[in-house]
Image (cartoon, rainbow, N blue to C red; front, top):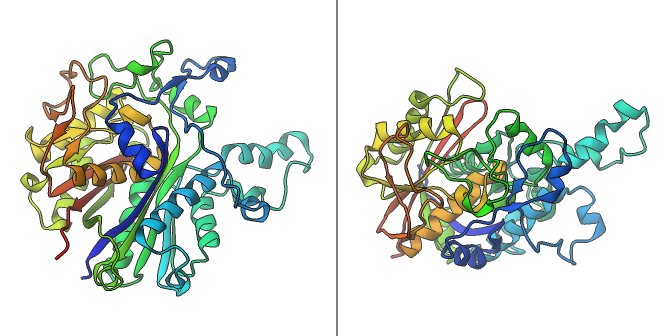
Length: 410
């Protein structure tokens, strides 16, 4: 089997656009959640909070022809991919078009506003809002297709529209495509643009935080006083590459992907099942030929929902006990849905390199219903972690687990 490494990463997030800004803001230990007055205009919507990307604009060199098929999420995906390709030393490289470079990318859905335009004809019996590019912007594979078009890739395409595991599943599929010799390079990740409808989805499930007047105090994953998640947005892209291929061209190697596990609960579409969640973690460990004690840090899904936190902590405890440090990026940038798996993978690799790992923001008193894990609290923690794990769990009972190895070049 072939080895798979990460040679580039790029992010667009509420903590900043670009890896440097993103990493610097993590050290501030303050979330990016804000009260959104616009959300107060929706009757019956209880949550008025969000973690939005600030100051992001479409690059001037994106021509009208380029963006005519792109919604905001596709634009963020391409921008993050440009950063990742630049770091990997692949910008403009003909390798991208030789059929051995593919794309694995996901989002929860297509661009929401375009979906509204598309279906307006059902309500108005007029087609004036539907254009030749409307469907392209709204289709579930919009990010993957737009990335392929923009970079002119001719290899495989794996669209992952699996809600909160879209980004991590894409990375897992990209890893397998290279490991089994189907591709040499993969552009992988996930993106999501904010919409009030996303808030409404979780609001109807009583799963959103309504601490509208204290945005810096929420979300609070694993805390006994947590009251739900906060919706965020952004994009994260990783460049995966076959090890010898990367080494031959002198590419920077940020980490090695050594483990991937994924399965489904097969029980309930929205309620997580700890028994099958833990099987996904075990599958990743088995795939990596590692034991639980080899993992130095776990990046949790950590949604700050009642059922989600309890189930995840129980599954994690069943595999790791209480010795492995754990924290979640969602306490900083909210739940970015289709983007979260990619953003959290990038954050895990950045922290692994630095040897410093974020604490769970707003975690003051661990919920006694959550398993007794080693939750990083208060300040960040210096940890030597040759192996880190990043986990995500989605509606539909879709579970994913990724393991990254810190690799030192010979």
